[in-house]
Image 1: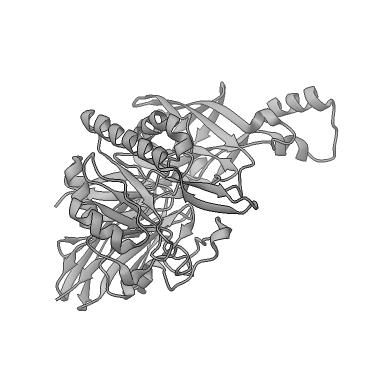
Image 2: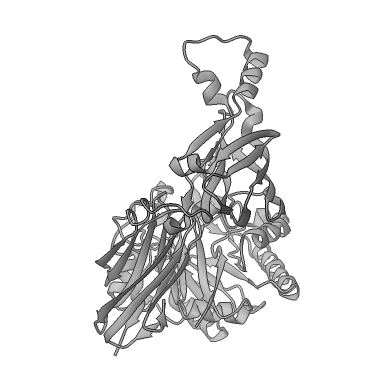
Amino acid sequence: MKYEHLWADMHSNIHHGQMGQLEQWYRHAKEVMDFWPIAYYPFAIRVTPAGGELEDLIPEEQYRADWERIKELAKKARAEGWPFFPGYEWQGNGRDGDHNVFFPGTEGPFYHPMTYGELRDALKPLGAIGIPHHVAYQPGSRGKNWDTHDEEFSPVAEIYSSHGSSENDETSFPMERHEHMGPRTDITCYEAGLDKGLKVGCIASGDNHTVPGESDHGMMCVLSKSRSPEDIWEGIRARRTYGVSRSRMVIDYQLNDVPMGGVIAPGEAVFSLDVTAANAIDRVEFLEDNILEKMIVHSGTWERTPLKEKGRYKFEVEFGWGPETRLFPDAAAKVWEGKLCVPGRILSVEKLWNSFGQQIVSEEEKECSFTVTTHRGTETGKWMGPSQVRREGFVFEVEGSPEDILSLWVDGQEYRLALREMLAGTRIYSQYSQCEEKITEKFGPTPHYRDDFVWHCAFKFRVRRAVPEAAYTLHEEFPVVLKAGSQYRLRVWLKNGDAAWTSPIFCRL
């Protein structure tokens, strides 16, 4: 069956103090997602008389009022024809791990018992689900307790977020951003759940507390029969889901005619895979029971192939490098006005957005105008604080000749991009002369034997290496013998470091 690939952040934690921004969060979510299961965050730090800090539920009258507003927004969104699922974060006593609770309709109770079993027993009859997240933390201290897991109530788990990767304790995405929660362990990781024989799919989502749908913190995709809330919900419950660490990938894989998340009988089968990514695909890892069974290496298969006279190419433009706010406090936020003009055609534009204030002003066949706002701050290390630099960007897919010259206008200045040079590698562009003027205006002439002062304080953006269609698309088929009780899944790696994880296909008698 042909499914639609629909994207969302299923871990957008809006706090009580941010409820005045709820409409802004909603508008932004509609810009970067196909649907939105919001995860209201009913917790705050409570300071003890002696100065200790405890995270606890906020007063009941506050979270009850907030929850009513969330449900009202769900009704509004559904009336506007946009799939919205009300939800909230549940933590309990920490012994079962943190879960986000979501409801299939626009209603549902706010219930926060101490154990996962109590939560499941109360909400499962209502059709709700509870998705575990950052599962690989210490057991008993908000790491996942797979012994109490219910496959029907929790059909998928979060394998990646701003915390890092919970897949296992050895991946290249460490869980070190929230050091107060400790390093990760294999006892509670995602693979530990699979090793117990549980049928649990996977997603990635941000654990974002300042803006929904931050590209840099991961997103999830569901293979849905349509864009209706009912079909989206069915796709999640059926585990037809996967997650990406950053840029989006369209991934379709099957064993015979069974898609990711499904159940298949043991015996001979044909594995088939199609991937379309935002950058060059490096490799795909085919895993059987969490062990690498086959490596599909894409690097080296396309680089020497002659370019077509007319072809498709992708490249990323990323904004956000600039001076330290210590020297230039007004550089904490920077508005970039841009426009890409191509002699061929612009086929698609992917938004790599991490904060509010982004806009595609117009998108036409030969021209795309945009405004992005990048941010620099000093919030790293604060409770639930974002990363210091919030960069913004786009992945452009264009059609044209290798000899094309593209025009990228940034803040009124034209940068001529020769596609052949773009294929050679990444290029950095700076607002060098503007920075020289700013330095002279503030500090006077500052001669030096090298240009550190200017270069380090100049606003910069980069155009990442362009790649042809053969680099970012992959089709593969091969036979496989399926073993009863085993599970089969994929990891996809791009050359730029982006990754994806798919829900397994489960082999059962």
